[in-house]
Image 1 (tube, rainbow, N blue to C red):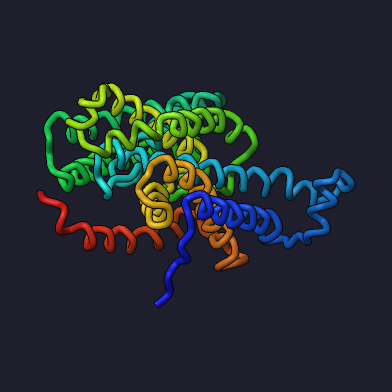
Image 2 (image 1 turned 90 degrees about the vertical axis):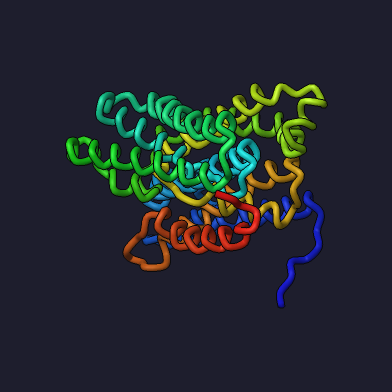
Length: 334
């Protein structure tokens, strides 16, 4: 039976960084038009700025690769934070409806303000935040069980998805590419999309790194956190706000990517342990690498046809979620 080598958290992060670099390079090189490493170096060095290869790299593959890395980091860290705040291993932005809330708000803004691209990230953040508040109120104020929190999130997600489909039905001409948005895709991402959302993601990632120790204190339990002088309610509210910012910004350009916030945090904890100081840092790298690699698979598996990356993630995430349910069944009570 294969076993992962015993490495420290820092060493695993280095390994994940190498995997991210390799995934990003292959993402730039491979696709419907293959690009050689020499051609890539010529473009990077500025020797070849008038060719079709330069235009493909600069305006198609580079924005797409950057988008995959930003969305992956944001959703992975958001998932780790949601799991820490709700103390629920099954929680993730897509499962408890945070992504759906962001998607509903973003799609509504596409209809109301089609030319104002800058408004998408804050609108998606607001939708994600309001959805997260409803779920966290169920978790914290009503003291419900962990499985009930998940079911509440699924119900809210269903309602919001119905709202998204209603908007799509009434405004099909405005929402070009909405099918890709629903499944989660990066084919139509441009520099403008990631320029606005990237600011929110970088700020959110910075805040997550700064407050990763507070997540460790929350993991000790509410009573222990209170005894250490922490304002538990305020800290949870703040961390949930940051998680919603990350998720909303990612959804605003990548669509409803599923299971990143579930698969990556669990995989990272398996490698580096439960210490959130290592988990958050590793999620930033692993999330970026995971989405970049899945997007590469989506382009290559059925070439010349291309799948939305969200489809590949659903194939991976669905079985993983079922396995997680079976693994955690003894610790969950309705």
